[in-house]
Image 1: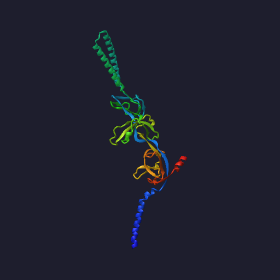
Image 2 (image 1 turned 45 degrees about the vertical axis):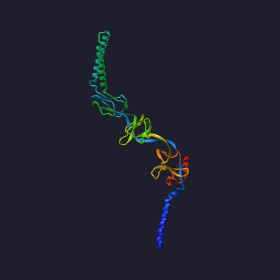
Image 3 (image 1 turned 60 degrees about the horizontal axis):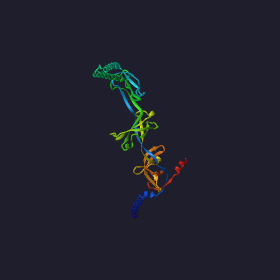
Image 4 (image 1 turned 90 degrees about the vertical axis):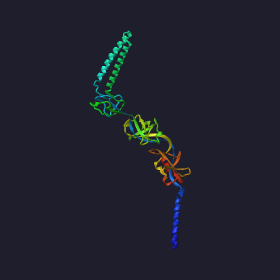
Length: 351
């Protein structure tokens, strides 16, 4: 019975000793040197790129509308056609407008003859200045009537205000046009606009005249553009600011409504090119890399990813020269002694 009673105390003491050994295990493990693989890295100047999602829009969009009433006699364009500035789109019946112009021109001719006769009499002293002034006023009124009649006749021909594509053509020959009715919608796609939204934390780094690279749709090639507008007030719902970039030569990307990505360089920093597999998280969930200190110990350094490429990721936050642990970083703790093997780096250099 005595042996059985004391056996319980002995087991309890043994368990307490094991727990104490486990508590001190991390400190003891820091003195254990772990073999890892690493590579030496030098920082390079790298621009920090802000990726802005957006879409393409027409630089200008105008509905060419009638200013008078009349039947459509000709429609000279089709949807999708490209037209030059001043190209004739639709023609409306002149009706009596041509006759009004000819009448005004005849009246002007008569007024000019009368004024010339009055001027000759005035020079001979046979015409008063008051009578001559009335003849001059009648002549000017006739000129005004000719200009008005010519303007009304010119409005029967609807032309393109600028070079572009015909997006809509809602009328046909025989339709009755009324003031405000649209003959065609012309859109200008060269230059092309790309519109996006920038968060308030980054809008201070975006300014008009800034050069940007734009990827439109699924195209692999990048187009060059320029920031032409940065909103001064945010969207009330998203609290983001609208920006516009202009592409002068969009080529085949000249379509409105395509998804686009603007690469806006906001600042420049020194960064290292590393493999994504070298990245890890600390206990707080912060992204970083484990590097080797001068005392040959692993040190966790928080980093910021500034760019990505097929060769790896560019990260900022490391010293100018650093030895990055590439293999075995999961097995070492912050502050643990390490022995770095550069064999893999040497083999890659020889290849």
